[in-house]
Length: 387
Image (tube, rainbow, N blue to C red; front, side, top):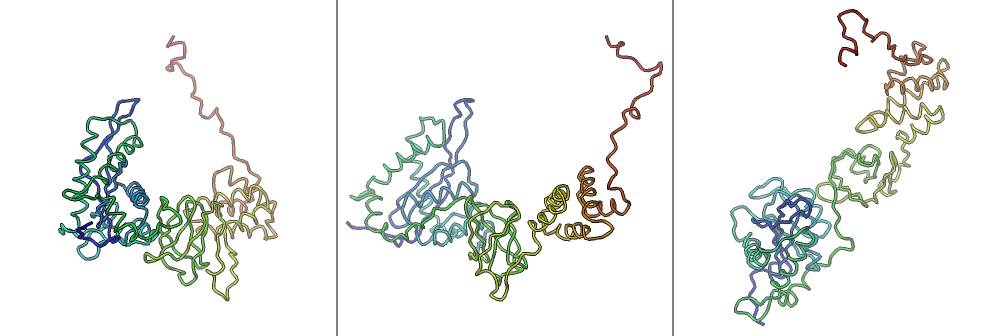
């Protein structure tokens, strides 16, 4: 087999979205919805993958990209997106800024992300060529068909995609699939043990206790102590939490949803430091529970009222320490906490003022309806007027 190659086998995968869209029809309303079409082409064999997705947004783009790698059964050395908004957050001739989620995707699969250079047609030729072929080999056969779901549309796309990949090149006796099996399949890196999952990205600071706070779960995750004080990127999926610094992963945890809990790996702590999280939400809540249920409820509400519970730690400490004051004690504090809850005043200052003025036994007054009742006089029409 005489093979004409412009690209090194296993080196690059070129990806782009087609300019033209396909559509699905809602069977209930008859509404037609446009779908974006993702196209990926391997450089050496030109084996192609095509998939319709809801949008060009990051989540749909990365899911389609993961599906493409599954379809090829391996990972190329680099992925070349055509400066898509979901891939590049800031274009630059020399150093474009990657979307953090795409960068994390690349790390997960052990591949490089190389955005196509602006005004460099050679960087885009295969992706654009793949789009043109998709118009002829996939769009054209589907033009007179209608589909009622994205899944149904993709099933039809896959059928025609296989026909395209098995069709011999012009003036050649072998197809893209033949060429892939001969020269490219074995040059791709293996897929990772775990498939990529959609992840949510947030930023965090490593606290002095070597942990970061994940607000979505109100949970703390440990980070190597050398990174205390640094700003990090946190990526979390349904099962895992990853912490990255300067595009390198520095911590990995199973995701926990225990509010105010800690996920701590011993090797993240300094060897001379026996980690004890003396100030943490669970400690304050347990302490409050020894005083009474209202105090526990008040402390919980104070903690939940802050974007980050550590913002409330001093308030909680000051409030709970009142129970040690001989003039106050646990009983008065518990009553003051109940009054704070009744008045929806979840603060240290309200409790302090209540106790200072000995108002903890004062209950909220029921509204006096008589003070809101309008006096009767001749100028007021009675209900019978409207009969």
